[in-house]
Length: 144
Image: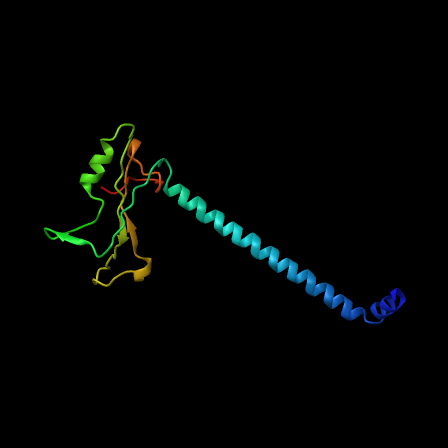
């Protein structure tokens, strides 16, 4: 049996090499995919961790329906009153009310710049030293 198998392998060297190459490429692609997905996952985790630097507790609003209007202003479950209540709790060092959503900037002809899905915006929240750790400034000052 061994001699027959050896004779078959030696008679079909090209087939053996192609099989070995197929296995090698398959293993390489699977390994590359696993490394790539792990690298992307770590990058996303680090980006999220940077957003929550110096955060011990994060309180987020949930809505059961559309936001209600109060005096012409949009309201959510989290407002300034709740931020003041959290700020008054013992052991709270700081409270930063974070606002995020969409903002569209218009050019000089009043045409929107960019695509709607790219127009994500948030507020700049200077902390100690007048800087927001999420947005390090190279030069100049933050928005006022």
